[in-house]
Image 1 (cartoon, rainbow, N blue to C red):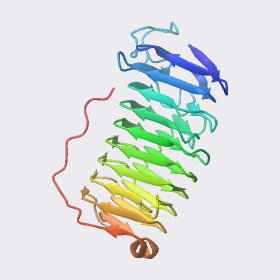
Image 2 (cartoon, rainbow, N blue to C red):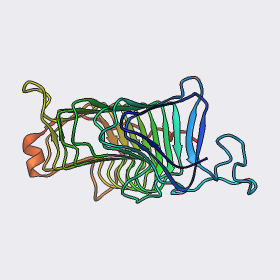
Image 3 (cartoon, helix red, strand yellow):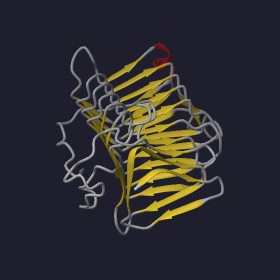
Image 4 (cartoon, one colour):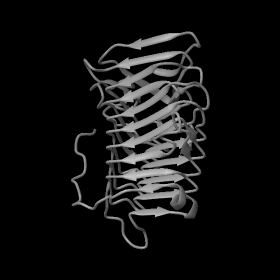
Length: 287
């Protein structure tokens, strides 16, 4: 069990497949160097001390119990951390630091979160606020489900780096599925995600764009996503530059519509054909 664990600036921590990391109340992990949690050969868990389900072990000796959102703080990937990896991990019952921080807080411009479940958290699932470096942040093929805030929040991320949000299931979060605010990065792709049944907009973009590469890709690319049955708009954009193509957007009730662009966003964005389709079933493969 962990109360506080820090990976130093030049440190490198590798977690073996199948490891279960349980945090005491208000526990957290600061990563200033590199964390490699590769659960390809066996899922790695970051969870609450109260979670007896993850490993079947009553770690705190209080009889059968389950975790609750906010039991522990977060995984904090600091600006100086590089090339960290979360692959086939489960992060559950976090977000207890401040609701604005969420369960996974990323300040670095070089890391990958893939094939993982970020679930049952207080505040946001993943919060990204990076402003240095020239790498790529990859958030790929994850389930980001059941948070009291946003599924993914990208805020004040500005710099010569790339963001790739692709193939994720973002479902049943109380606020937006994805919220992007006050951010300009080199390239920004939101591709082939399922963004459904979130409390506010499926995707909201506010005062954000991409600077592009050699004059191209100077927009936030929202392509081939399924955006359905969210509480407000499918996509809402304010003072932003987007390319919105080939998405399935449906199930958003009046007074909200599939897509809302304010005047600046309308003038500066490209909206190609997007289509409705039947409501997909909810995901059933998360804990």
